[in-house]
Image 1: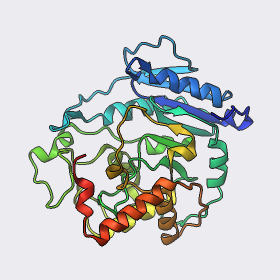
Image 2: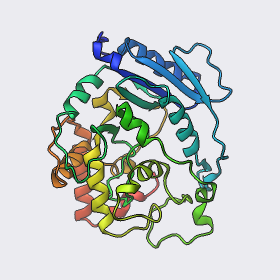
Image 3: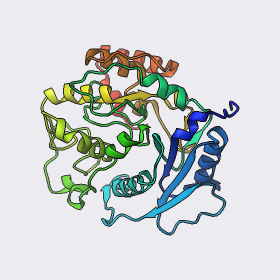
Amino acid sequence: MNPPKDNAEDYDLTFVVQGPIKILRNRNLTRESLFSIRKFFPNSCIILSTDEGSSLEGLSFDQVVFSKPPIPALIENDKSKHLMSANFQICSSKAGLRLVESKYAIKLRSDMVFTKNSLSELLAKTRTFERNSKFSITREPVIVLDWSTINPRKALPILHHPSDHLYLGLSSDVKEIWDTPLYPTEYMRWFECNTMPQGARHGGNLQRFRAEEWIWLNYLKPHLTHQVENSYEYRHEAIDESLAFMVNNLVVISSKTLGVQENPFSRRVWRTKIKMMSHDEWCSFASKYGAKVEKLDNNVYDKVLKIVWWVLQKLSMQEFVFKKT
């Protein structure tokens, strides 16, 4: 690990650590997350926003806020038994962000650990980016992670799907993005009673909109020309609009460059990663849609995956990325 920096700019940055107190295999990942923030960002305020009734023993933070969504979660996928947890995330993110008074804020999940202090440097660089005024809504670019940010031009054509694990930017921008309505109960198992669009890559998911899409789409909705009906049904022109808004408002970079490690016990296979948007792809799309940006990331793994995807396309084997591992 790199040594911490006593950076005066840390005073302008508040960490909203959002989510349940995550304990896996006898490791308190939330405690590790909070400790890493104290280590690398000693001047920053930490707000823990977690579930009502959580134990705070052994945790270090400056403020805490508890929340409980008023709408119960339903199972959104009968195969995986995964709950639609969007409302837990929305409620706890909003509750934490309301307490932020600093110029910048970072909303992150409660199982993410920092390995270095590079945030101020990255924020400074992104502030110099020139954006297409037709599509820029945020006051400054907001940083998100590449993992779970979907590239609709590749294997999985889902629009408006940036990662919801972490948002870093001006507090006013991050607050507005997360000022989203609660996810309706009737949308949680939407395709149980409605016809799934032909050819949809849904993986057994029944929800009308993916949680990530719901958050970002509601922020964009007043500015969109092409509305989408669900995660799998849209006009072809909407893909261009989706990408234009993403690259002119969000900066997609890797966890390594940002200096953060996500849940160490999550199993992430290359077949999933190849569907995501790499930083290189984000740079290419930015240029295409009228933004002038600087490359911030040099991830060798992404370059390997780019070659793999090219080979799969040449062999007409794109379906291979959807096979079970």
